[in-house]
Length: 469
Image (cartoon, rainbow, N blue to C red; front, side, top):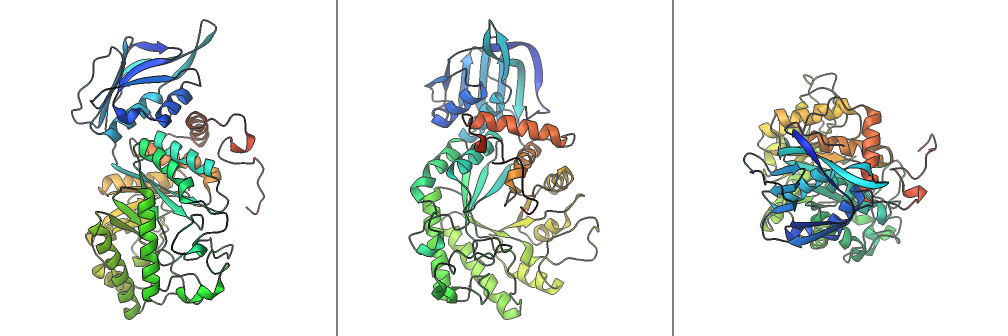
């Protein structure tokens, strides 16, 4: 089991079942993906048959519902049955995810049965906003995207940020996608599954740096490698959008509109804007950047969304920072940091990606909060020390939440996606690397069985990697 809630109270007895199960539950649970999860967590031994009710509950047999006092969801399991209650649809779904995580396979009369040891739980996350960021690369396949979304749903994330690296076909400009990019109709079913698992999809498109929609280490550019005549949309080296030009702003607005329509209702839009290499931060250029971002912030506010922006271009590496913590700061002077932060709209959410701190607090986050911004701290798969530093800071400083990033390392970093999710509910100390990996692998097998396909098993298609990868 990945989740070990500290507020769980063990009680005598167990609920044991085999074969199909009849349950009563809210219509939000009457979804194919929920039934798939029940079957997966029961090791393909049980199917869920749900009769709908009009309360935010799920029940099997006869177990007394627990109150929702000071919690988001409650679970009660006795010998006689199961009861799950939630404050909202998303809370109820997360309660069911916690229930499924406690399924244990046992031998019974020569076959397989499922045991859930008796317990009472009133649960509430210590971090309310738990985001995860996923890149759809040209090498990403649809089944990988679907499995990742399911994995995050089982881990009770609240939001998934989807960034299409040249892999979504747009109406506004064909060259924004490689020829094998996914159509919107291919992506919509996965978005619907995410919503059915209680998660909001946050669309993302880089609006400043990273305009190539490719990793700089490989030199690919989705637009200019297909149509060099579109050079005037970009900086001379192609790495940044030329945000001073009306035609560029108009194109980016069309992209936002298409992504919002695709991803459906939500509260956020991630516009990136990190690592704007070779961009000289003169006062005139800083004004251009701030005006551009404030314009988007106002546009998002009009549609009840908030724009999320990476924070590195607005941070200066101050000499008083903890020398053990390496920080990503791309503002050249403290004056640049202060000027840009003073000009930016407080309706923007600043995502502080810090991948190397090993001790809390992560000091850069406080630069943003002191200026009145909501701040998300963003870890990567660098180990439990880094995760503890980031999540500890989020809790101690009462930040908005965290956004775990995966980038190109998901082939080894899937367990850290799980570790971040666990840290949103409880302390992550005590997780050794081997246990984390085996638990994450067990969860993957449950959320999306692969029927013996070797390349789809685990989180890496192969077991021997090139030293250059």
